Image 1 (spheres, helix red, strand yellow):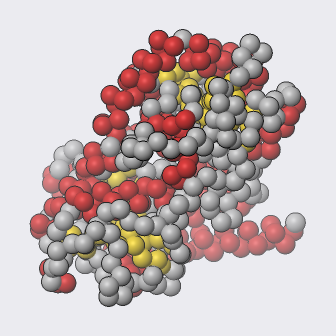
Image 2: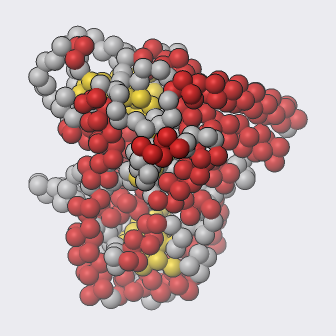
Image 3: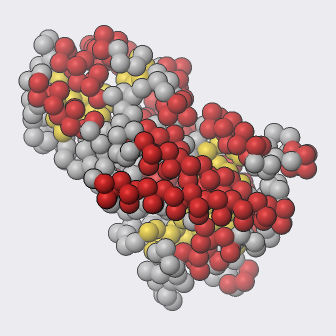
Length: 468
């Protein structure tokens, strides 16, 4: 479906008809697929649309996804698809546009609407890690140069920025200050700058963990190699360069000497993103499991990627969630969405220290956090959750108590408030960002710098392919 949607094809719940000119319009622009097969960017965009549609009955909310989707909305919002060619026209039709990044082709729409940048992940740091193994050093540096200019452009376009935690907020505010976007006038409008950059973290799934009607098992006694009475340790999500599955595998190798019923299952080996290469860490995990004699016996891999709803059933059925990574800059700024899913499933977790979710797990006793690369500590933590039933049940009780605090409606409250102010003021009072006319010259120069840096990057990529 393109934009505008054809008459009679509005999806979601029936809504009261408003005169077209009176409706406040909000576009949630997904940068990745949203539907049965999706990863965290699509999941977040879907939930933003869902929450805003319910919280803003005076507004028309539309979720735009790249390409076809099988999404069936469960809230009063519409779903449309877009292409690179149709995107500029689509953006012009709305008052507020929320996205994880805007291409330069949307610049003509800068005036007359509010752009909300959803920087829930520090993609620049993630990219530095990802490109340690996928490109040459020269291409990696060119990519960094182009992404830095792209980020400068995005922050200059932004009327409001949301992110996932206070560490990220500090980083974005520092960058905006250096770009001349935090002026005395901006500060005087709100000396906390919460109206410029605020936290709106990832939320837990809205679905109940236990369905109202009994469902068949999808994991125990069903997944090949997992018996009904086994204790299942689940690794949710994929395996990327900055994750450490090897420490977990080594810990499980020790545990199964005494508890052969313990199974470690990696839930994803390929991402539902076209052309995305997870890298060599997946192969290393297979190789170590094979070397230790555990592959297919106590260490199992689900080939590919599970549909979103089905992955939730796996997590709810597992006994322990696990995620291990490295204490680096990516971890410092991260907000591990895969761990948030375990919190929803009320599954006690063992993870590596270094990020804000690990701090939450330790502070609220939702499981255990251990130092990076520490096989002894990982083994002891997993063993405690397996053997100490009182501690395990206490963690589950704490998870149940925490979940209402992580509801999407609560996490997205700053975004809801911004959109409400925008609707009430007809676009004149929600944003405190520096005026658009003041930002326009910098916007033009930063667009030109990005175009040049991107051209250099593409040239180096072609050259490296030619040489190889």
